[in-house]
Each structure stands twice: as structure tokens, then as C-alpha cells.
Image (cartoon, rainbow, N blue to C red; front, side, top):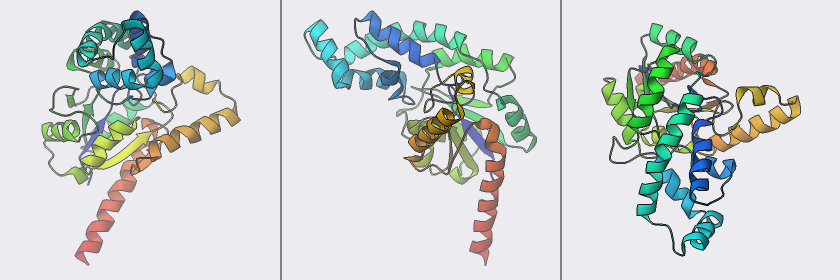
Length: 268
């Protein structure tokens, strides 16, 4: 049976549309005289922030701007410097976009009532998470354990962060864990850990809209965007894709039924 659910942060439990990192990335590159779009910033989402900056610098249209401005290719030293500049920008955006996603507090309360422990992994560093976690706690959400970028040798899509989080929760069997995330790298860390994986498509990076923007869509636009977001997450073949954490309880029930069924088959 499921003993732990390990959530991502931005776009999964807080910050509907995963907007906090996006504006910070755009502002960061603007500070260096490089123009990037929100769509550019979203593409590497889910990996740690150093790798995110590094990946953006590999995009041909971004790299060509860098070379034109600085007369050379970007280096790891540049990424180090940009990360230092990025952190205070992201802290401000985290404070702005720290609201819990609707249904999260209620679902987590019901999971705990079933004896299920709550964990978190994130592409945020501990410095950034230390800003976000008290803000979430004030709204009624505080995971039992949280593992941040840089606290394991490898980040996403490696399973090391989610494995470490499960260990902190006292769980060694991946089949007793569900990883919930709004990005492919975040889902891949769960898949590589061999645990159950649930993508959230509407509230996160794949949709990329605020709650208000999402609610303002016409029915036809909403259906198109929902389908596109779902397909983006389904490319890595998670166990399931749902709209939001609000829909998670029935998924936990279904996964528990699968586990029971498999045990019965093995015993037959």
C-alpha cells in the first residue's frame, strides 16, 4: 500500500502556473543583455537552477546573443555568476507567487488521515526553499521532509533526490511511494526510482497559466490547452496524469487497488 506521497513545489503544490521562476529567468537574462521569452524559460523546467541556466545558454538563439555581446561562448563560470544574480530575483518572485494551489491543503490533510507521509523534492536550492516553506506553512501545508537541489550528488532526472526523501520518511520500497510533479524531469526522477508517478497538467509548467488566466479561457481554448499539457507530461509515460493535486485521492485509491491485485495474483 502507498505509505508516502512526494510532491514537487512550484506548479504542483504552490504557485498555480509555476510563474515564480519564469519571470526571474527572463529578468536575469535581460540583466546580461540577452532577450529570452517565458516560453524559453519554461523549456528546461524541473531541473536544478544551475542546469536550467546552462541549458538556456545552449539554445542557439540565446547562445548567439551571448556570443554577439561577449565575443565568446558562455562558460560554467558564467553560469555560476548568473546563478548568484538569479537567487535574489527568485526570492522576490517566490514571495509573490507562494499561494497554495486550490485543494492542496485539504488533500494533504486527508492523506495524513490515512497514515500517508508527505515529502517534497524541488529544483529550488535550500536557500530558496527556506523562503517558500514558511509561507506555505502559514497556509497549512508543510511536508514532513524536503530535499532540495544540490543536496544529492545528482539532481533530476536522477532518482537521488526522491530516494533520499523517501529514506527521510522511513521508506525503502519505491512501490510504496507516489511522486507527484508538473514537469517531465520531475516525473523522471520518480520513474527512475521505480515508484508510482502522477503528473499534474493544469496547475503547472505544462499549462503555464495563472488560475485567473485559466478560468478566463473559452471552453474550446481550455480543452486544447489541457490536451496539449497532458500530452507533454504523458511523453515520459507516468503512471497517470491528472489536472491537479485536487484530483489525487482517487488516484491513490486506484494505485492501492493495483498493488492489492498484484499481490493477489502473485499469491495465486
